[in-house]
Image (cartoon, rainbow, N blue to C red; front, side, top):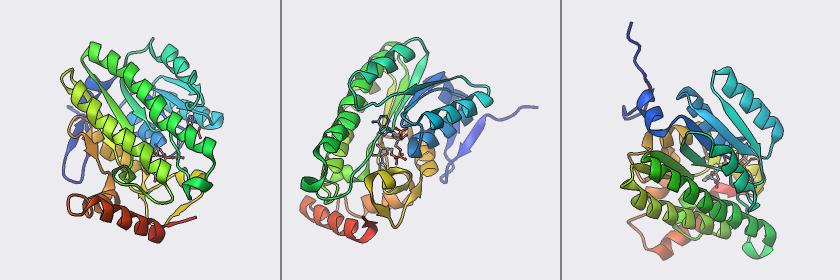
Length: 277
Ligand SMILES: NC(=O)c1ccc[n+]([C@@H]2O[C@H](COP(=O)([O-])OP(=O)(O)OC[C@H]3O[C@@H](n4cnc5c(N)ncnc54)[C@H](OP(=O)(O)O)[C@@H]3O)[C@@H](O)[C@H]2O)c1
């Protein structure tokens, strides 16, 4: 009996064709930030899509557990325990992945910090720029070149809805995400002609380890699964996705309608109402 390979149905009825997705972006995916939250949810989705996966993080127990899970599904895994904010760490990633048939990169290693910029630890803020901007930019350069040559591939780069305006209590975090958003849009346009897809992902608040690291609490949030699932469905269809209802409401209720100054003021108010230290 013919078994349909269509496995993912979106709310709108969009379908991800499992075998076509693997043909375009397989057979290996590289996922940074795989040990928790959104990156981990991507790994779960990619297991369903039958990808071999290189997982990167610093939590060795989580890496071990995830490797076992991937391999239990008859897929291959390679795990890298690396602090990606350190410049040399990326060379270790490239040394591992250059031997593999990589077609998809998911860049989700990241963190936020809550509070007034001048009171926050300066080295944490520098680390945020290294991890979100420099490391991801270098990774996109490396895999972008490989994908350009092989004329196929996909890059999913996590940004945030805060990319679109300066945000009180998250000034540096919103700035690094603005960098990522502009960067993703630019390379997305450049790589399109080589059949390489770039997706910028702009979630609103998501229930992950992010809150604990940033020492804050969201009063409303979406799930990491919603983010990963919507992103996979959007790759190759959109340049930017706002995954889930909360991200869409927070983004579209402001943008296009209001001046930038008013948007900054409203975001500052939203932060006061929806986020607690
Ligand atoms: N959660 C939200 O509300 C939200 C909203 C918008 C955008 N985002 C973005 O989504 C991305 C993922 O965040 P998340 O919510 O999934 O947070 P999370 O649950 O805290 O996960 C963060 C992941 O990044 C890894 N990581 C952090 N620092 C690292 C470093 N120096 N080197 C290597 N790996 C590192 C962590 O791994 P180890 O702990 O193993 O090192 C973990 O796997 C981030 O870019 C974040 O800015 C999140």
